[in-house]
Image (tube, rainbow, N blue to C red; front, side, top):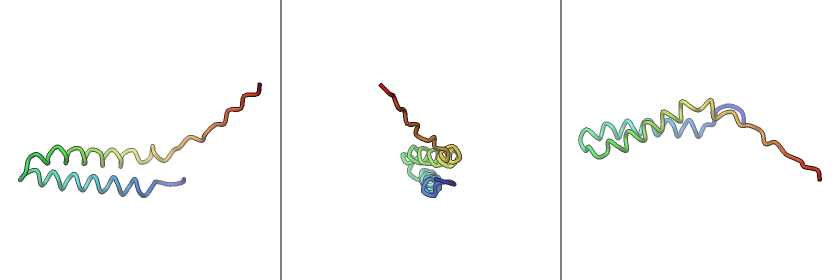
Length: 66
């Protein structure tokens, strides 16, 4: 796989925007604040770690001769 995964970008953006929306709603209904913080932090973490997700180590086949 080359480049950055589009689904990871989409998930990060959706979680970040959804988290911000929940944080705005939490001004009127405070229990939503916890869900907003969690969604926002998860979205930011996904977006920040995109470059690290790009690198996948190849599987090494081990052959043992008996």
